[in-house]
Length: 525
Ligand SMILES: CC(=O)SCCNC(=O)CCNC(=O)[C@H](O)C(C)(C)COP(=O)(O)OP(=O)(O)OC[C@H]1O[C@@H](n2cnc3c(N)ncnc32)[C@H](O)[C@@H]1OP(=O)(O)O
Ligand SMILES: O=CC(=O)O
Ligand SMILES: [Mg+2]
Image 1 (cartoon, rainbow, N blue to C red):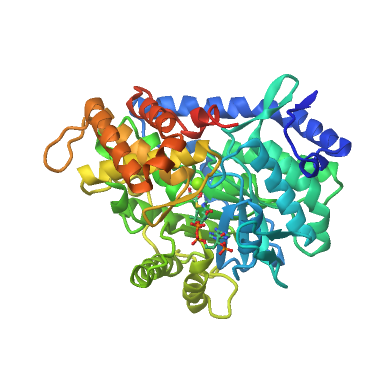
Image 2 (cartoon, rainbow, N blue to C red):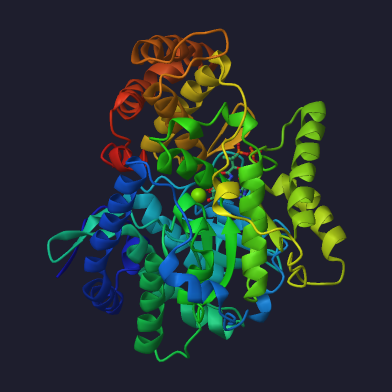
């Protein structure tokens, strides 16, 4: 039996009609129980990495990697994805994103959304209204009216990762997986309209760690198509390759999902986080300061190039990722930001990526100009095979990253993680901090880095050893710094002390807490 917690507006409740609930029950009954086993498989694998094993390509799936096969195909409106804007599913941002002039809008229930119950449900209302083309919004402060342009971007919905539950809903007494909740509602309310309009139910799948998780999603999609009498392959997915284990299974993920998949995406921020997490126990793989870990580092360059080669061999698109710089109102700084973004996008386009992500409408023109130049009249770069490259092997993907660990780097990590956690538990999943877009993935890097430096007793430049005591002292000092930067009124009315407690718990803990959003979720709603 499905039980849904109260606390919704009338409009949000409409989403939960009898037929919608009937469908959700069918889906949950078929798939909800499979998620815990997939999560346990992750834990088991992590235990092996913690005991000293390194990730590698799987011997049992060599035949898939070496076989000749292709994905089923790419729908017309997904062939050209040169620039995609991403963002949470707030009403104004949905309209702004669809109007931003990019090919695609990735509407996000994941890294950039704090999954409060009202936000999760209002996000679904907003996407439904956007696809119905009835969406509008009037800003209560400025009075500005927002509505859709003639040619909005194609919409792709990113559901939550497998690890996140939706605690406001139970099925047979157990909380349901958030990813199935997001998928079920978006699919149910929008697939007909999308198909009538020549598009389709398209999804981004985050944080997969293995081809068995891809198999799970393939089964979910096929089950759904059969239940709604839709041809096989109607639902299309783009999988983020943003965990270290998954980079070793890209062929296998494409193969498992070959009826449904159209692309892989380099989710660089979670990937860096996952490198730290997966290799957390390996003293020779400790990362330096966050700003040093850029896409031209050998291990990240190998990841991007292998993803492109793997995708293009199978007829799938290879999407690039997010530069975290966001526009500034200050002209010189803004020029600097646009140059950084241009350089980042040029590297991706030159490598052979078919498109890229931007975090803000003010970056659309810059990113489009780069990809227009590389793509010319072509919709994508599927013709770039990278076949002539030297093989990319496990050592390349795991290569240690050189660079300094500094006191300034550690203090910045603390301030960013603190402010991000405070925003997230307060219901805001994406925030500008010191000129960068910070979301769940980038904040994870900040806190995981400190955990790993502490775990291995690393020294900062100048000789200070990272210890729990040093972290506690820096945290206290950085709390004061943040209070000064934001003003005491904002600081005192916020939830910085709770955020600091959570940050401390996950930083000094002996064993690594897999996601900050798991303990964080107990603090929201
Ligand atoms: C690692 C990953 O997973 S990356 C993917 C997940 N992360 C994201 O999607 C990041 C999304 N980006 C954002 O949320 C925002 O850009 C932030 C929080 C970083 C900055 O937001 P703000 O400080 O509000 O930016 P700013 O004030 O410059 O916004 C100017 C306008 O652009 C709009 N805007 C900014 N970013 C976006 C966006 N991503 N989508 C739609 N509209 C946007 C604002 O709503 C605002 O609109 P208005 O002028 O009509 O009021
Ligand atoms: O989801 C994207 C990432 O970089 O993480
Ligand atoms: Mg991510």
